[in-house]
Image (tube, rainbow over all chains, first blue to last red):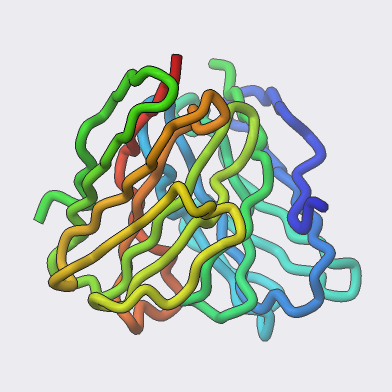
Length: 113
Length: 115
């Protein structure tokens, strides 16, 4: 049973436009959410996180939005750059920032010049 | 510090053989995690340590799997009597006990192929 779902396996956007990656979760005990970026042959790299007490967190070009009632979060990348092309994983934890993480299957983002 | 280091990067083994992987975390990090990632899936939690104590193990960690962190520094993950289904990327991650709103740091992983 997939507790964290990323329903879009892939997304293609034009350079300079907005990329929106979506994630849904089923476990209402999750209280901390993260996005990781992964390049081929490398481990996932932490990108941005949000606690369940917030509904938005912003870091430069990256913003994560959390809608607890809908059990949905999204990652916005503006403007998108070719170097953003990677697989993006959504992850959730029921133990705050130190709990083990439940990952989605990932969305492969391609940003075309 | 150069980050989380995993060794080897790649391992090919015959079914039934034992394999051992090593992870060296970031030196000041108390917590160390092992994850497994198969093709088309996200990483799946296996186990984690706080210092030398193994605090949680996933049901994915069968009796053939054992992990240790003897001195609270590096960790090893051993798989006995490997099966083809064990073929995966094994990822190690580490974090300090209080890292605020920051995720933990992953290594580049060990890719295991069981033939």
